[in-house]
Image 1 (spheres, rainbow, N blue to C red):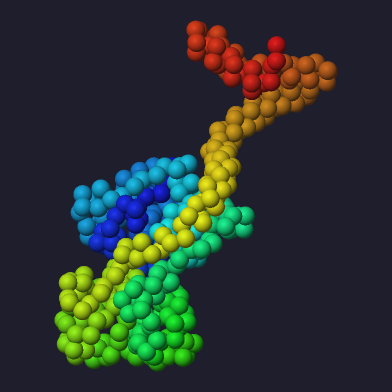
Image 2 (cartoon, rainbow, N blue to C red):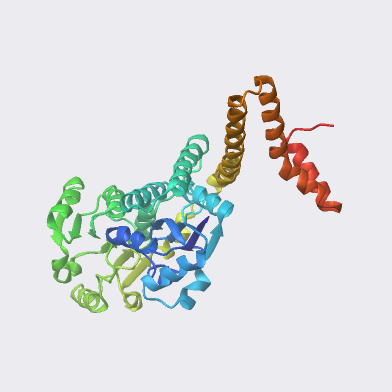
Amino acid sequence: MHLFALGVNHTTAPISIREHVAFNSENLGSALRDLTTHASITEAAILSTCNRTELYCRTSEPAAALDWLAQYHHLELGNIAPYTYTLPQQEAVKHAFRVAAGLDSMVLGEAQILGQMKQAVKIAEHAGTLGTLLHKLFQRTFAVAKEVRTTTDIGSSSVSMAAASVKMAQRIFGDLSGLKVLFIGAGEMIELCADHFAAQKPANLTVANRTLERGEELANRINGDAILLADLSDRLSEFDIVVTSTASQLPIVGLGMVERAIKARRHRPIVMVDLAVPRDIEPEVAELDDVFLYTVDDLAEIVQQGLGNRQQAAIEAEDIITVRVESFMHWLQTRESVPTIRALRDHAEKLRRDEVEKALKALAQGETPQQVLEQLSNALTNKLLHAPSHALNNISGEQREKVETVLRQLYQIKN
């Protein structure tokens, strides 16, 4: 059994692929339990965000995990395989450290991914799919991310997705005051976007959510209004800017809905920012006149702003990660030696018990303690050294030199 990280991310797959392998947090626990029903997969955690879906597994057959990913989402493996990556052992450890530290993000140094990874681990713990290996991996991963954040400037001058959404809207409208903004959803990403847009002092902020209560919580915080998603079709035409990020597996905003809204707006432009994966807005909407539709992939140009200030910090972060990866691999190698060490000790213990039993019988038969101790020590020495002596006597050439070198190291023989 070995550690593997596998999946897709924003550098290997477009959103049209990523959205088909994304997981909803509500069904992630059951998905993990289903994944670990495979005999070859004993531990698992799944990280699924707008930019990546990754499986961290302890398995002897990583291909089985990719097969499961395709089957779970009812996809042909051949359709997603070209976009996937499989990272074994040390590469998987380094990847986990880099992801948590924000080095593998679309926004270099962004901090949100760390919280998302912690949530993924919490779900795996509750699902019962996190064993000793993955628990240790993520424990170290979070410690490394904290060290990187504390000792480098990796997070300085970063432009978040939320800030990029505002900048994209400003490219179209310029000043955002006097405009009406609609947020679809009420999760963490929408909360971040709401804060950024509220700072621009638009004329109105509205939150549309499945439950009015949750929408009102966010609306009250930003001095806005709340509506139900069920009312979206009738109200969409009121808004100049629409930002959406929900966990829906199907589009919420369809082509027909937007066409009616544009007609009602008399072709006044509308900016739509879809931060969801899978997408909340049907891709065909982008073909409409007077609609400016942007996805997370479209925001890549903006989020790269300030990159130069973070590149030196990224180099420093990579150095930290290299050292921490070596430390983790040492722990892993030590742990992998435990069965062999245990077997050696069990073997030696059996020899010891056998000889002690013989010694006690000899004492009972009247032999002197000095004789018994001499016999005991000689017998143990001969039996413990039998295997290495036999190995040396029955091999030759380079192989014998290698075994002899190993034995000298094991027994600390200097001459």
